[in-house]
Length: 159
Picture 1 (cartoon, rainbow, N blue to C red):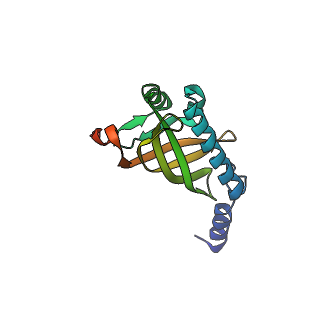
Picture 2 (picture 1 turned 135 degrees about the horizontal axis):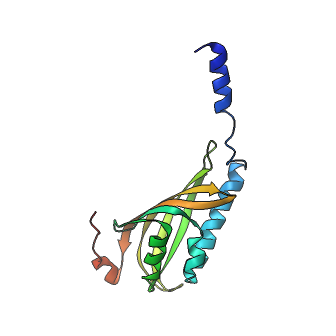
Picture 3 (picture 1 turned 90 degrees about the vertical axis):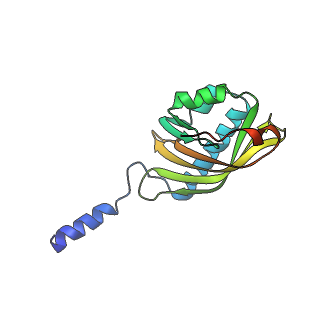
């Protein structure tokens, strides 16, 4: 490769992605706001609103190892679990400078109602993708780290 072509290639690699036009602190604040809004939809059991935060092809690994693929499968999992409210609390959100992607990690709990005792909880990570001006969850990984009462008897799901 000639020095001129190498310079041109380097310059092209430094051009920001069209999908990532906003500064990282602003984007991180948007991701955090989206997470809090989804938490509110989960607490209110508004399944349709909750699902608007996921990409169509979202992939989830649940706290005990189950895998769900697709927005409708994830929505149905929430529809079938009416006893617990899940709250995700971000510790860190990092936004890519090169792509319209963000990383979120934090803690989560599954509690009885909006103020009841936590039965299960742990750590999570999420990949967000900015699509059409909105941050959407492309994937989530939950790991159960603690339990109380009946939840301690729930089995780990095998692949």
